[in-house]
Image 1 (cartoon, rainbow, N blue to C red):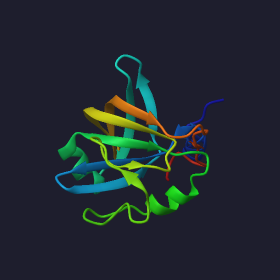
Image 2 (image 1 turned 90 degrees about the vertical axis):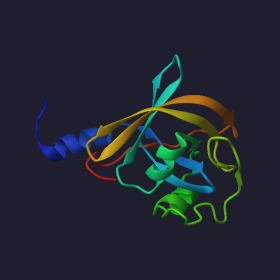
Image 3 (image 1 turned 180 degrees about the vertical axis):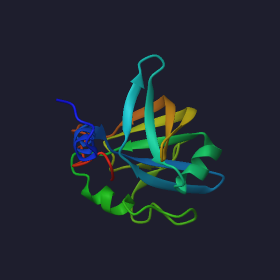
Image 4 (image 1 turned 45 degrees about the vertical axis):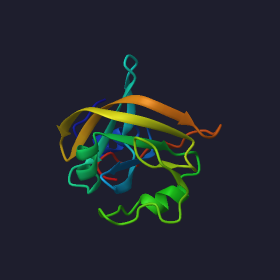
Length: 159
């Protein structure tokens, strides 16, 4: 039976699985990366995905200027990248120190990622305390034959 109890709603929403990725972006000599856990395919033609980013994160300034980014998909051992990107980075701070990266037209590519998506922003929609980016996948690479990490939460009410 459905209930409007906040705790129950939070537990149910927390069971929605999502992927995790490191969103990387570069513009005008600046680059950064951020852990994103709300990504989902949205369309087949053209191939599109959605990415939710908490409003006010420093990455948004570069993202809005560049209009494109890379999604570096995480394999089933997420801990090293979670530790590295989990705290976030200020603009101007080296987000890639100690990591192997390759340059791309869409932002740095992490060589440890299992796949990469080159994304072009098509629209941004305010969604509560986040902004939802609807992006077209323009380019991709597959780096490893590995299973992707699938994420769920104990509650949908917080990270």
